[in-house]
Length: 203
Image (cartoon, rainbow, N blue to C red; front, side):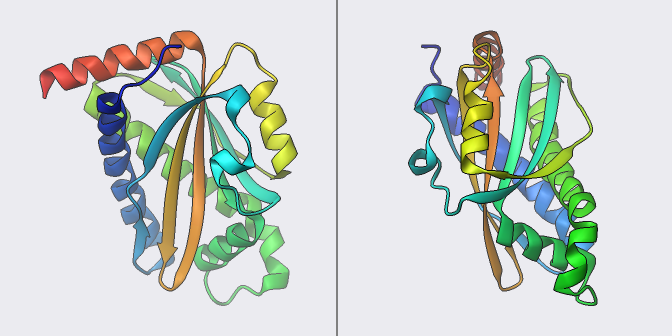
């Protein structure tokens, strides 16, 4: 297996921590309140090893934002929040004047914006710190189930590896746990390791 060493994982944690800081600052402007994103914990797994226990998923239905990234390596990124937490985040983003009944109308647009902010902040930090080009597709949003998530991970044999990030997002008194998943091919994982090694050599 083309694995990431502890040093590689520490470097990625540093990169994604910078990205989380950028995302928190952008989200704070949108919701008009302090937003905190935890230091992401990072791990690499085979997609066949992933289950609800490994991902610490606390629910069965999730709001999922999906984007594809291409550049120095290719990855599919999926940002997950439980359905309840997704609606709470949308309410915070849209303002207190929005009723729960009206949230569904804005859910897709707001969650795409949230995903775009968090995913692009993380990937732009990676691009900046590793000095690599990265471009992304437009985000799409759907409400999905645990089974659908795992089917998606295991349906493409060309992407056998999963880079998992666990992120805590807090808006004022709310607390939402998010999961950021990157699906990587064997070639993309090798390329990522090469670029992290270059980054570590330059530090």
